[in-house]
Amino acid sequence: MAEFDPRRFSFRIAPRVMVGGGALMALFVAWKFTDTTTAPSAPPLAPEAVAALQHTAFTQAAVSQPGWDRPENVPLKVLRGETLEQAVQRAGVAPEEARQAVAALAEAMDTVHIKAGMAFDAAIAKPRAERGPARLIGLSMRTGPASALTLSRSFDGALRLRALEEEVRNEVTVADGEIRGSLYESASKLGATPEIVGQVAKLFAHKIDFREMQAGDDFKLVFDRKVTASGRTVDVGELEYAELKGVKFYRFERTGGGVEYFDETGKNIKGFLLRTPIDGARMTSNFGLRRHPVLGYARAHQGVDFGAGHGTPILAAGDGVVVRASRWGGYGNYVQLRHTGGWDTGYAHVSRYANGIRPGARVRQGQVIAYVGSTGLSTGPHLHYEVWQNGRRVNPVGAKVPQGTVLAGAELARFRAQKDRIQRLLANGGAEPSRQLASAD
Image 1 (cartoon, rainbow, N blue to C red):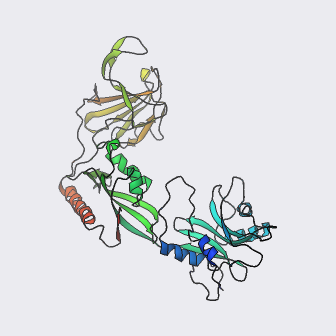
Image 2: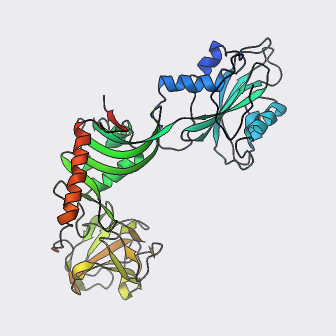
């Protein structure tokens, strides 16, 4: 029988190998890649994929032997300060068997620098006399999103190492479904990751109140992803298209290399400046004459205030260049950004600046530039936000700022070609080479 060669993944099995008993097959029929993160679990493996992996990994495992009970599964995690060998011992096996198992694993992985929380499954058989250590029958350990290492005991009693790796392919996925529960839950069932759903939420934040979405509302997403043969999403690339409640956005790469999202007509979904430079903040003071809360007399309030907790991220209202990031009198720590067309924005009373925010630095709309504080003349944590037009402060609420970019010429022609491609994908259920449709029940 060929031993494990770390340079080559082999799925051939010697014909003389004894096939494991029914109990062991049942033990690993739900052979899993244990994930220690808090993200929702990946879609279950398809039955045929489970069978193939199970066959490869465990047909060499021994059946129940005289004096031993049938094998049982023991899920384990490496504890803080614990070695992998000690973790295997906690399954109930003898120190020598744990040492042999780790020595076998060392042929294909680093078994010394193990992080706490690493998970694996051990299959053990307990002695029928209920005295003495258990016997290690097999071990399964995830080594990547589409790969794992397994140990299984063959007919001669030796532990054999196998590397399992599913084929990974690139595809453009069309997710067409209805809201059932939340957008996050519904899109996740169609292969979308939390990152994709988060990007969708950010795109539609200016157009849709997500609290008004109801069960049965349609949504359509087109995104790139890497997926295994069993349907497990390994990695997700770009969100190419998103549609919610009839509102449609298309991803488009500009001539200069920047990526933006446009509506059906080729208009940039972003306004020139964000309405609110803090997510979810409430306005606590308007622009105009008011009694100053610290000085105690009436004077012009040349901006608007947003109430938010200390340390809340402050976002750049638009693309621009930092012209000030320093203390400025009663404004305390202050950031001033210069945008195109004679427009500036200011952010006062901040607690600290984000990394890299200094005069001359370029920022993008929505980038975190500082954090809410209460520096300067302030009675509590909040953001004082200002908009300047040609050197004069104007009311941020009523300011007539320019609209978003509208594509024209050669860029508009390229955008229309990209839009037509997306429409064909939607109409044909993703029917292009190496494409797949994910449809809701």
